Length: 483
Image (cartoon, rainbow, N blue to C red; front, top):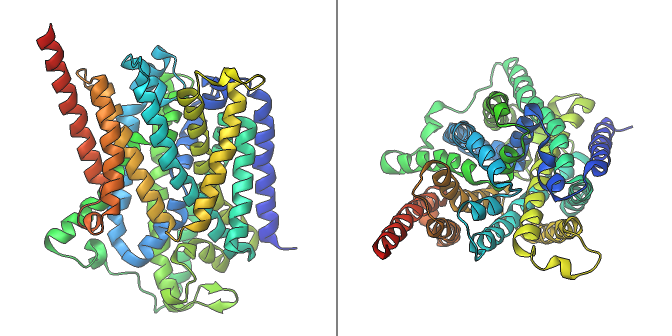
């Protein structure tokens, strides 16, 4: 019997069992969206990290490091810095504010905080979250197709179908409780994969006298002067997005007590540092392994990047080439875990904001359909749209995640940070920040050449941050003049 299939099958049974159990505990929208605020620091920390680091970390970042070498170190530093900053500056004040305003989603919280009687903040937030999350979820489905293709020989479309069905099914069942508890399991598998696989790879390579790692001169990607600085800043700018990712912010809102934030923070940071460096080293080691013929795909040795079917398939190829089949099955499940833990979280947030922020006033007009029922309907609809997008797109997982990450981070990051720490923030400033952050990402990323000069992650965040400040000051003065 195929040990890869056995290990993967055990993993699927485990997470589906969690989903069934959680479905019995999910009684209303607060349970579905925030787990009833009864999850402790370990579950929240692992859930935040597992949902934050998707297929991008397990297959996207290793693929990028394979091509760019140590240049991806700036991305690693940027992401770790963003995680630390978000836990330090956002988590606890956000949890306190969540309890104060009795909110279950970020749009509702911002709306209540600024007394948005017209509902503009909630409406814009719901549209922005849904738009960018479709790209994000599509990236996870595409990643699932790649991993299952390498592992079991399924076609890309067959792998996407299997991944999509599993994710949508258990999100429908248990909502946040199912997502958070499966994230705990998935987070453990992910960190094991990202720590053990590069260690095994390094040991294998060390036994060969002819191996070499990429030279440290790739730290600047072979560039000098301004292009090198721009590239470095582009990698570091990944850290800005952590403040505005709704599926991560929801974890801060859902913890059982603000007093447990400190413990969760330590757990999350301890997870993040080895995970990111491990993902980068998988890519660096993969380059050396190809030169020494250690990697095998479809029974044939791989000696160059050109022999790879897809650079983002490096991690599962490395696992199946270096590890016993049963262990490779567990670690490849880690890649699927990364995709599932992110996609289910994003589906959950999308459906919650659509239900609460777009249809809250109208859904009761249809007999027999509660908010919980509508949330599950939207989960299915958004999942299907994301699947169709993943089927049609030719973009890499890394590229799709970068686009969605930038849009969400720029739209919500400045708005949330200034809401928590700048008392002069006004409703009009929040609306301006949401619009400018989302639109500048779309424009900057789609004008050829702009994102090559300066990343849309940095520029859209900067534009949105300044918009919140300037518009808030303008309307503050306008209000003072009237008085």
